[in-house]
Image (cartoon, rainbow, N blue to C red; front, side, top):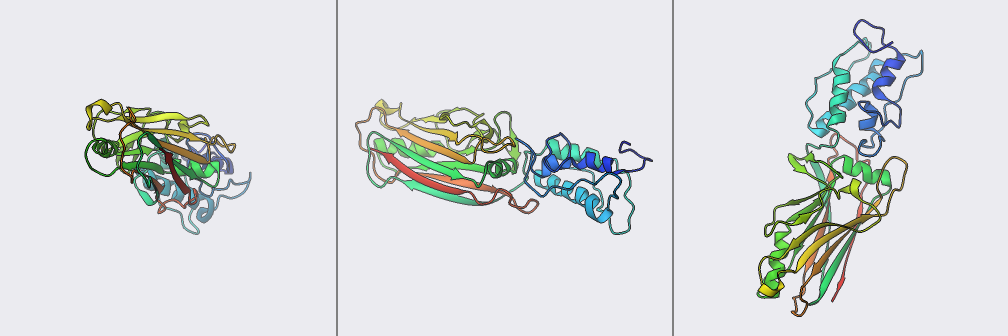
Length: 317
């Protein structure tokens, strides 16, 4: 029978609330909490279904349903109706808040109230240059699902640039690098999500200044393919007047789908292209780009995404 007041709560009622171990249906606990699919799933341990005719144990399955829903709500900063976790000997009863709470955590699943620690790598040009530079950062996850859970749980990749101050072309690239601010890759391939009280598209510029950049906001993790895609371009707005077509650009791609649950890759590559136009002035050494991996919080969630690695390099002349 259906989960309703005054009805007998059966195994099928509980199973409809938690879903299968690998579940993608809306408003099921395991869709949001466990493996999920595409933009749903934190990679946490699934709550097992109950066999037909078996007893739903208050301190086992029912407790897990209640406590994991509360943890998912705390992670996403969602307001839900409080439900007291059952204790040994208590009766499993109808609670109208449970389906509503499951809908809330599913709807808000891509938001994160807070984040965890960071991992960073800085690639630095050791010598002067006058044509252009390409900084390459490769972020590698253990699997496509690990990458998917990372971004679904509020993980981000943040890029910042710097160049020594000075005059002429050095002033141009010092200001240009500062103007780019922090270019952040989040999960979305459309729309926005809220992370630590800030709204993010797939690609978002935070801080910086200068001219308004050209941004493809839909090139977040779920917008990546194996093809290079220009996600962000910032033009110079100071320095020698004949060189204001110079730019810093971020180009993104992945290694493509790796699993069967809707990931877009286990390896994310971000190129930072610095182009001096025209290319006849010598810029100083020590141009640099830092890639920072912002890990999700691990108070309400376990770190199902593992520890990604970053490799950085720079080439050019």
